[in-house]
Image 1 (cartoon, rainbow, N blue to C red):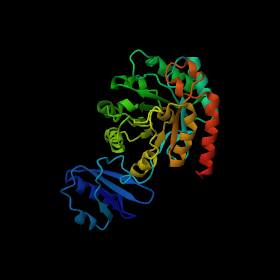
Image 2: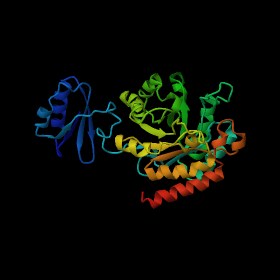
Image 3: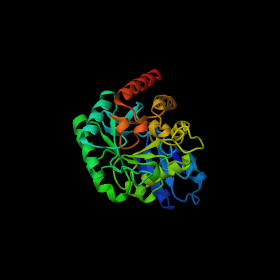
Image 4: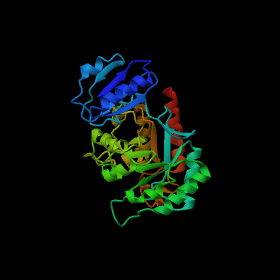
Length: 335
């Protein structure tokens, strides 16, 4: 249930109404917007009389919410959420954030060289896998803790905040210096991991699962947010369909749908969606035009020798060209 209050309501009146509602067995979340105050009721609201609440002189409107996700729901939080790491690294403020870097951190020279290149091209975050979930147990699994240390070295050199993937709650203590923790597609419904991430105060980049619906995606975000961590970034990275030409199928419609249903920032991963370097540019431009808040793009200094996902990685020169196109389109769109 959502209760929109009239303008100018005093804090005392808000607290009195909230206390009354909580006495009915529900939890009340208060959101103070730029022009309105909204009370979001979470729990069993069947015992609350809507007409009685609507009759309160401080209440403007009351409506029930059918969607099972509450904290991620735009109805509870009309304004866009903004994730800010520093003055230059923001997601969701109307600009286009670019997260770029290699699939896997391989060595210091590689990650630092790529970090310098992508920053020069306009990237605002550095991505790189330290713990790598791979389909085959015989392929490169990442440098693990050493990989995170190398990402920190690259951050010191460039100032770019770092984004890297976690695979297990037992690894959380190794992610204290990571700026944004990524949850990969395979772990989107690893609910025990999501619960643990809900207990920390750090932004989480949540990737959509290979075959998950939008509602399931938002419910996974809800797991994190219900634990108290509301700094969630949604990432559309392509879903599995019957098409085999591309690695996955980019669900570009998910961008405006997620922006309509939720207040959370939405980024798109064209590299994993396509698996084909020449498709990264058109898919990136399509994502920007659809309203995405950011892009996450794989860049490797020598894709042919990459230890993972080299076939879909861009060279720094190719990334530079695409970044220019992305920023040009964003400017042309007037934001």
